[in-house]
Image (cartoon, rainbow, N blue to C red; front, side, top):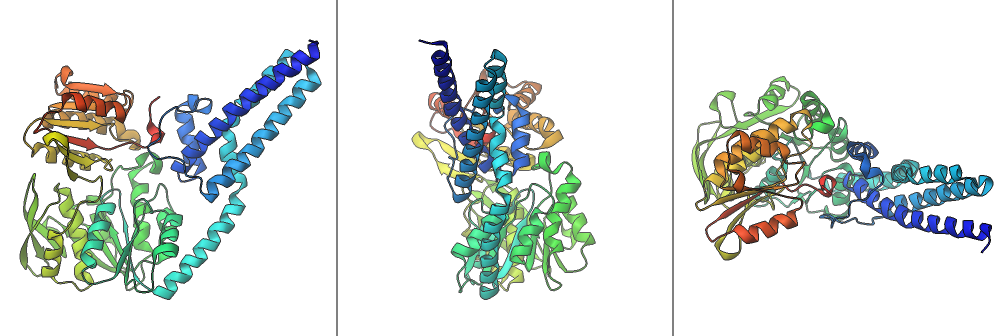
Length: 498
């Protein structure tokens, strides 16, 4: 074998390895970009948080698989073209110089593979903007044709439950459509309009999520809400907003876009929401809460809660009092019910109609959802909750149940500078409510473990695992009839620990 042939075979083998590894890495990073809503800056932040991610894909079974939508196919194809260009440049360098240094220089190209997905995403911006524009124009035209009453809901937490409760209450009188699942971005809402909004829909309830300034306004400019609900302002996604003031300003964008005859609905128990309500004068303001001193349109008193649900009295602005009961769990759900009920009253339902509707409410999936487990075990599924107030309330709900109480959690994320303190406090709260704690992810749950230690929780009653699948095996081993298990939060693949 000649030296030239040997070099050619070595080069071919290296290129094959690069191609196999590169395609796998590109697919993985496309998956992560999709979970970051195709926003490059979020992907970059995720990559830079652990530089190993630049060169090694996680070898885990994803909870949310990659979906090859039209956009994903375009980005992946573009990245493959860029990968081919990189490989061709590397071959030219090696062929022209033929030195060992040229191989090392070519290897450096391979380490830049991680940038190809965000690069392809950037290069395709004009194409995606044109495609989005077509869908947005179609959605706008459909809204102008149907002309439903649009109700926007935003907040750091509570918006999904409020959306479900409002939809259930209004459906007794109106033909109502709500954005399903996680369709809470501009293009997600656009898709719901184009595919689901029908001529006979009277009401369109839109959940609005955001990770930065301007994103709520963008959704509102599409749907033009007449009623806006602000449920809470807290540290949820503080990592992205930077400050709680930025969070408040972004959520308030919904209120700022309401028309002059619009209605702004605020949680008067949340001090930041209350402050925003106080400064709102351009539109009608309605408040709800538990305290009677803040002129609420609707409030609750005499709250009692237990394993069977909640009971309380609805009290309207005139002082009319009506007892209600619901199977919903958690005192914080009283506020979510009040938000929905306040809007229902504004749209013409009577207090009696509302009370009857509350009795029929069901918890949305994975939000303090009570389930019957196998072999006499009770399961409380709160996997979609990820804020400190909600986590504390979930533990309080767990305390209402008899038998042994087991917590399974990966902790809370995206809380920015308050994350460690919040998780440590969560650990201390868990120590007072639980008999056994299963922590998912050693690094992510370190602060929770510290909080458990602060409260002198028995070390033998804490189990740390890497994945939710391992947690399930632990539960199979330790659970007995009469036990109650709380699943508190379930992190997306972005936070998986390899």
